[in-house]
Length: 380
Ligand SMILES: [Zn+2]
Image 1 (tube, helix red, strand yellow):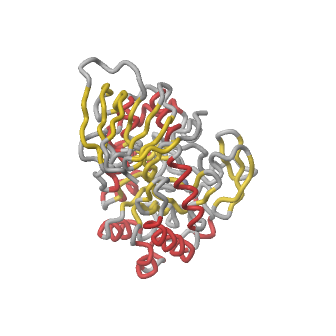
Image 2: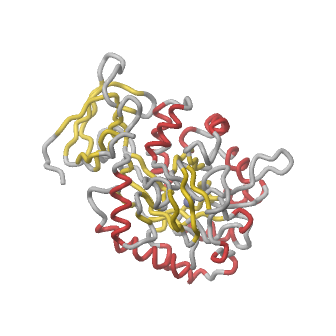
Image 3: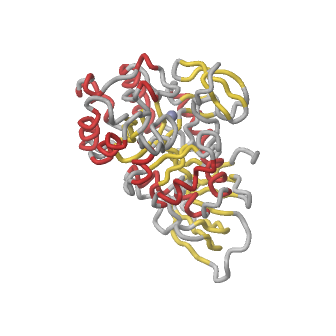
């Protein structure tokens, strides 16, 4: 898609440690050079690394667990919100259905549209979740690691980047080790673990934490659980759904003051109904209802994912007082580091030219994937 000709874009560059006025020269889909201004950045659009969503179930009417057309549609919708890379994420389902999902995504990866967010593999949220903290996952398909032979899981491994697991389940720590040895990161979550059980999960290789505070044992002063273990383990990544509904913003400083800044991950946890307005639909076999920005299992108060994209998450976190470079890193460099990917995610020479141009209110104006600009959804 690139022409080979150099082109230049200027604005306020969101660098790793500061925002600076300057210009980015792009050549052959990569950042060739950065030139910074002498004066402090005053105005002009912000230029940030493209966003990376490692936990997203669908967008704009398209479900990650649907057919290749649905994956195409989801990737295109995400790009229009500044997301340049993502992991299509499955909900808990029968293992046969998860294997079919894995095969569909694998076959689709090389054909994924160039005008969409780039898939980096896939994420499985389940089926090894605690029934007591299953949230919006169908309880009939939950599994215990000790009860599932490894040969049943082998067909899931190729392309699998992240898997959520409740560490207190029988066989969980063995499974975390087994996955780690195969290059798959695990995310502790949907869990009623004690702090000791949670720490055991991180100690054997649990890398991340699925939507911190949601669907987990929390900050109880007599019975500390997963959230406390996650907050106090400097190596553990934590996902935050920053829609201001899943976690009250009053708690966000608990995360940003306790966690090293490179361990925060903004995720959308969006479902297919995102971007579709109010209404009802089916997600993972369960009926859900969208009212405003709130998604619940129909007829209950159980949250069932979000309808935001990472552009909203970055805007919300920055508005809460987190410096823009840290808010952007949580949606770009940090999730890539979790996945061991370093060819993108920073505004630096040699990096892939995946960029988001944001207006002064941090609304996406346009998106560059590998050196080519694409239109954004009109700022809302
Ligand atoms: Zn989810």
